[in-house]
Length: 110
Image 1 (cartoon, helix red, strand yellow):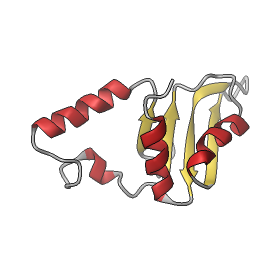
Image 2 (spheres, rainbow, N blue to C red):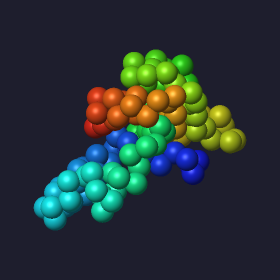
Image 3 (cartoon, helix red, strand yellow):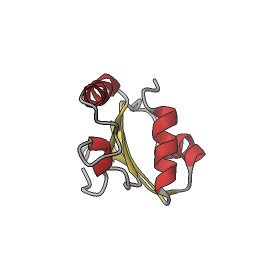
């Protein structure tokens, strides 16, 4: 995984993210302070997308995510031997605000 792509949006692991968020809220952490995991990733323009159908192409992923902003880079991870998609990708937007829009709209989508 690329080190600059740190914001996770794993469509198969939404419950775990929600649980962490609920735990933070129970502890009085509102997500804006340095104690929150959200704070560490707040300026990232890159999104990790997991749980993708393996038959999607780069073009398909681009169409889905370009609804929320201009894509600077898209990397659909493929098996080195077979060339088949591994079901996850990294999407980097030109503007971090597009990251927020895509996460808000697609987090948990199936």
